[in-house]
Amino acid sequence: MRLAACVIALLCAAACDPEIGAGTYYCGPELLCPPDLDCDPNTFTCDVPGSFPAFACPEGSEANEPDDVAADATALGQLVCNYNAEIGPICVDDLADADMFAFSIGPCDGADPHVELEIRYPIAMAPLVVDVLDSSEAVVASGELCTPEQNFTGMDWVCVSMPAVEGDYFIRVRSRGDIDCDGACPFNTYRMILRYPLA
Image 1 (cartoon, rainbow, N blue to C red):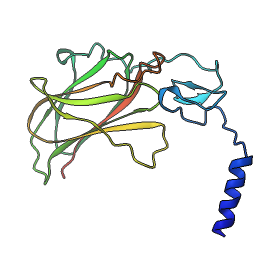
Image 2 (cartoon, one colour):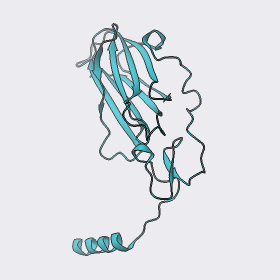
Image 3 (cartoon, rainbow, N blue to C red):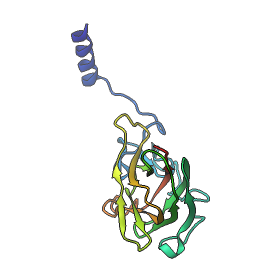
């Protein structure tokens, strides 16, 4: 039975020409799409060329600008035990743009007090990096790619986990700076999830 299924699959791979409908396929890195389709950067799906507008930051996603430096950072307040917040969408509109967020860590008596930070962004456009800085703006933790293996959302995830040492901190999100589709996609949007779990 398994052999028959394999033969059928091989014959289909050789003879079938699957049709990919517009708007049903997520763009790959650097706006990559199947032939005859272009990447709509507003939905990060492949669509009919000319059927969508140029990229625009989502409404409200730049409400905290300017926030490129610590002095202008968006205040998130003090994190308390069981804090869990999702923020976004937020826009990084060019390779020089950065978003800064200020927060403090309060006491927590859990078994393993730590802070978890996660950003999710479309893989089609400029990849993003996230760092946590202390009050002197020294980097104390940096994000690592943590996209689940069975993730079919067209998004990459970057995660940070750090000990919950009481004090003042900044989150900095910016473009990685090495991929921009030959200048065609130096922007991206993202959502940020910040947690202070008990355990």
